[in-house]
Image 1: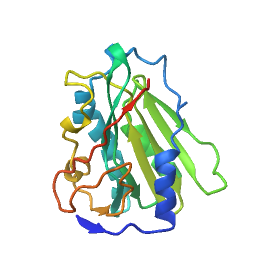
Image 2: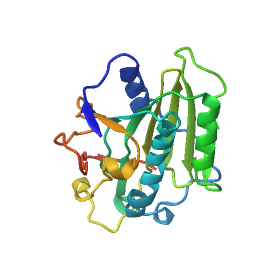
Image 3: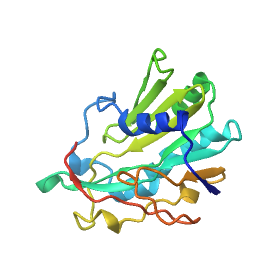
Length: 218
C-alpha cells in the first residue's frame, strides 16, 4: 500500500459526485424495516460494511489496477428518543474503469440476493457518468458512479440500533484499509476533505477516523 497526494481533474470530480450524489430515493423491495428490527450497528460494521467495501476491490481487481481511497469511513449519531442509534459512511474509492456492463454484472453478483433493491441508470448523463444504486430494506445503501476514466464507489448505512452508549461516535473501531480491501493494491490520498473524513496519521495500519454529530434519519 502506498500514500500519495490526491490527483486533480477526474478524481476531484468523482469525489464530489460520490459524496453528494447519492439519491435518497433509491428503490428497495418492500417497506423500510422498523428501527428496532434492523440489523444492529455493530453487525453492520463487522459484516455489511466490509462486504460493500470489497465490491470496490473486486472492480479494481478486474484490471489488476490500484484502488484509490479518497474518503475514510466515519460514524454519526442519529435518530431521536427511542430510535437513537448510529450510522456509518463507508470508504469512498475510485477504481480504474471497466466496461459498464461488466460493472453491472459485478454489482448484481455481489449484492445480497433477496434483500436488495437495484437501480441502474438507463442512459449516460451529460458529464459522461452513469450510476448503479443498491439498497436493502434496512435503508443501507451504496452507489457506483461510472466514468470512462474511473469508477467511484461510496456507501452509507441507515440509522441503526445499537447496544453501545449513545452519542459517542468515537467509541467504534472502523475497518482498516487492509481489512476493507484485502489483496488489492491501495493508495490513500492525503488531502481528503477533513471536514467530512478526518484523516489519521499517514502510516499503514487501522484507520479509525470518525466524525461526531447528531443527525436525524430513517
